[in-house]
Length: 119
Image 1: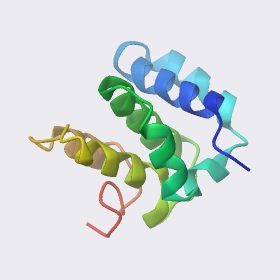
Image 2 (image 1 turned 180 degrees about the horizontal axis):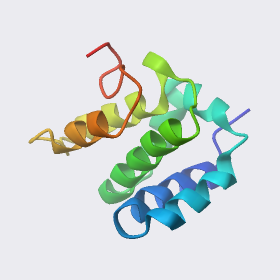
Image 3 (image 1 turned 90 degrees about the vertical axis):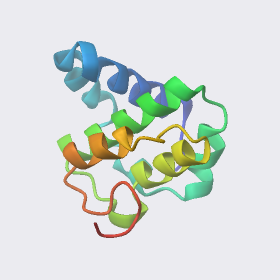
Image 4 (image 1 turned 120 degrees about the horizontal axis):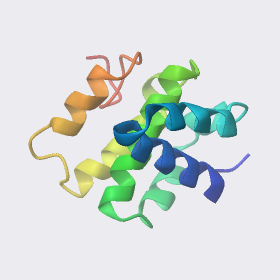
């Protein structure tokens, strides 16, 4: 089982819609309802995809991944997609003020997000 373009596109779309149309974001959850395995894929799989994204897309991918994990009760823990995506955000220095990390903490049930260790 692989991480596919449709997974990335759907998560980005969810992330975008979280700000403007929560109902539409929730409707998009159905597109990935049976794909919870993507939340536990290896960091290399996520790094490969993250490398191809613009900064804004990367941030929306993260928001989509955090939202879907919470809403669909996906398992992931310390190896959840949000950990690997946030690591890419930090590598790009996109969260200097920790606003993205704060958003994650406010919007997740996963105590390992965003850093991969218990907070």
